[in-house]
Length: 170
Image (cartoon, helix red, strand yellow):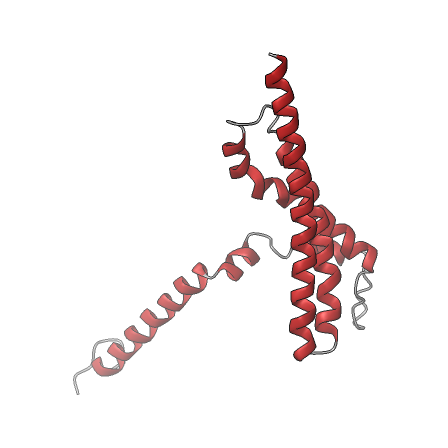
């Protein structure tokens, strides 16, 4: 068999090129994976912050207290609520006078909703996966949706009443 000049036969060189091409494709697909993008963009930041004061002597790591978890869930809702409500605000501002308050209502609604979700996840997953898990998750999501919906509903009714009063005054 003729040598390719690098000490590798042409057959083996072809296999090696195909293997390298597969590795490149896998790396590209891994880069598209949302979990990988989150990890690379600092998605592990909250766990890093939580572990700053932790004892790193090699023992088992302690779970954060419920107050910390629920506080962070509340903050997450405060930040993500306006992100979710931005498109709604764009549509609402054409019809309601003080539509910017919708962003505040979204922040409050999702802050409460995230606390409800985080409160329900622990009981649902603590006993392993079983028939009761689905029921607990369904009840949790129902309660979170009811809380978010109630706050949104109250805010929207208030905004519409304020807008109708403002139009009567003109």
